[in-house]
Length: 412
Picture (spheres, rainbow, N blue to C red):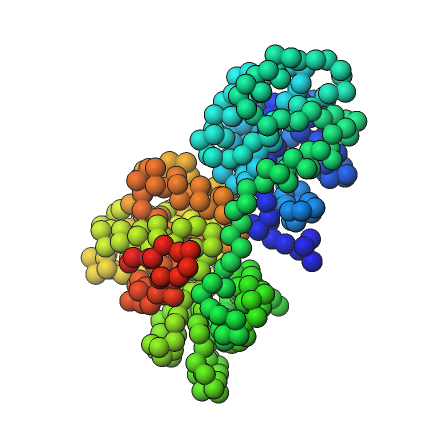
C-alpha cells in the first residue's frame, strides 16, 4: 500500500543543475523507467516533473526533476524561477554537475540558496564514463566538505551507491510521524465528527480524516467516526466519555453546543497546524484579526486545487466571518486567494495570511511558507484557528495540545 502514500508524506528529493547535465537521464536510471524525456536539445524539461517511488530503508519518496538553472531569455528565466521554487518543498537536494565542466555561477548561486534554506545537498558528478579527470573540482568539493559522488547516468554506473548516499543523508525529521497519537493513550476512545456536506469527496473520506484514523489505529485507540447529526446518540451510548473529539472546522458552531465542556475538542485544521507547521506561530497570528480595518488586504492560501462549491470554507465561510464587523457600514477587507503551489513571494501588502490545513503540502513546504511570512513580518494563521476564534472556542480547540510531551505550550 506504500504506492498509495500521498505525495505530501513522501521524502522530497529535488534534482537541480544546468540544462543537458543529465538530470532526466539520472532520474530514469534511478527509477529504472523512462519517466523523464531525454533529449540533446537544451531546456527539454520545463515545468518540474514529479515521480513517486519506493526507496529501501526510507520508504515512499518523490523525485523532482527541474529545469536548467542556467536557462536564458524571459521564458528560460521563468523556468529557473520554477526550479528555485521547488527548493521550498525539497528535503534533500541533488545538485547534478557535468564532471567535465565543474561548478560556476549557476551552481554557486543555487548552493547559496540551498544553504539559506538549510537543505542537505549531495553533489552528483555525472558523465564519469567520459574518463576525464577534474582534479580542481574534486579539490574544491573536498576543501568545502561537500558530500559528492561520481556516477554515469547514461551507463547506470554508481546508481546503487547514490541510493546509499541518499539514505545516509536523509534528514531524520523530514516527516513528523505523529498527528495526534501523543495526545491520547492506548485504548482511549476518540470520536471523529465527519459531516457529509457538499465538500466531502464522493465515496471516500478527506485526506486528514484518513491519516488521523490511521494514526489512532496504529496506536491501538478506538476510533468512532460519526456524522454530526448522530453525535448525541453516540455520546449517550458510550459507557465512558471519549478522550478527544475531532471535528471539521466549519461545524464548530454546531458541535460546541452538543459536546459537553469536559470532553476535549479540536479540529483537523488545528491538528495539522502542528503536524505540518508550527502551532504556536499559527495561534499567535490569530491576534491580527482584532486589528483588521476596512480595505486591509488579507491573503487566503489554499494548498490544493479544487472547484469551490456551496459554502466553501476559504471562498465563502471565512470571508463572511472576516467582513461581519464591517457589514453595517457597507465596507470590508480586501481578500486575495492563492491556490496550489502559487504562494506569493512578496507578502508585505497583507495584514494577515490565512492558510488551509496544508494536508497536501509536505512539512518542508509549509514551514517555508511560515518562514517567508515571518521574515516579511506578516502574521499567519489557518482556517481552523480563525473559525474557532470567531466562534469563541479557540482556547478550547488548542487546549489538548498544552503541556504535552515534546510540545511547546500554546498561548492564545
